[in-house]
Image (cartoon, rainbow over all chains, first blue to last red):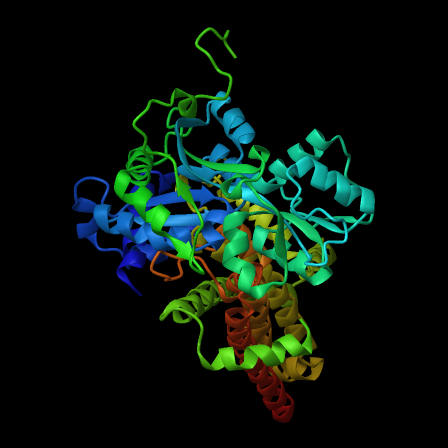
Length: 320
Length: 239
């Protein structure tokens, strides 16, 4: 196997070795299996080299291929390995809550704010954005094409009882969808409303099979457009659609004060790297099928204090 | 998928639509994780089956019932339980096993152990009483008798091990939860197995890659099953 495996193995051993003493014998034996492959010299290197960063993130950043594209730059710069786990925003934050990841990259501000307020996340930065689009079959049975309002479009879909595929997985996209239904004043339900409980790509496939509508982030839709027959019927703000379909991504380190074994140093190195001008340019340059998927947002001349704190937070707030 | 789409995909199969080394590393992880898990399961299961096959103790039927129930454990439930155990907040949290091959080995160990134990036990108890009596009549000690019985049951035990391997390598639920389906940025699998890779490729709509991986997995499982069948034949001929 390659260097990356050796690195991660030796890292695991070094982080774990002093803690392993009291553990169950069988499992220690298992862990021992992997220690054989890791070289001693790796452990003696200074700094973060050889360590592994666990990033839990959403299916949209992963399935579009963005992370695979940019991560090799970070891995080379620091001599580390990034383990990207694509889970959906809700699950990604839950993994971080349990101390199972070091840094989270997600796209549901409400859930991120709750995460921050509960003390699990620190050093949040705005990372990038794209937008959501409402996609559906070309025939457009609910007649939503070109509507300027996402909530009007959802109301029209509900009124016509055309099949709508929902992620139903507590992801960022699902959260956005539920917020839109609430804003539309419609309680979705009935045979026409189908929760798939899967990632965006799969939800698009399901919608495609059934000639149904769904809400998708633009990135995943573009990266999959050649495989499916759905088309964009309501545009997001990037193409002049309503601001309610904006899709901002944020990144946060797991609070080392809550989870002391979180790899905070490397998390901050990662956040620094991904919000740097060079990486932000790489994000802007990343294209699928000739289209830009993500728009960088971290580099700005002007201060933006809102990105560091939960929305609506002010120093006058009483203790939470 | 419709037949039409399948036909449409056939040319794509020839192009090998995946990154170099990607499939190889996935096959390696699958074999490594399932291989070690089954090895450990075997080391655990065979002694248990031998003890249960040669002794009577109170509660033996209960243990048997538990093993038989274990053969039907849904892999996602096992994955969930192992997640709670290896998660940072769980009892093995300090070992930092979450999202590693070791965590996947633990869950596949739990999955493979019941079938290996149950089938081995059936093979051992299935050795005819005549064999035992003959061994005893020839002046064999208890140990001699046990060795003769195990020798007779060896094909059944081999079948058990391969059945356990078949279960381990084709399950998707638990390795997805505890392994995280991780590859490095360079496209080298860390905890991505054939099954979780197929799940991911299907999610991304990359059915061509998914089908290639599916073909590899099917070939592996069919090979293992063919070996099982051969062992079974050899066993019956032997008798």
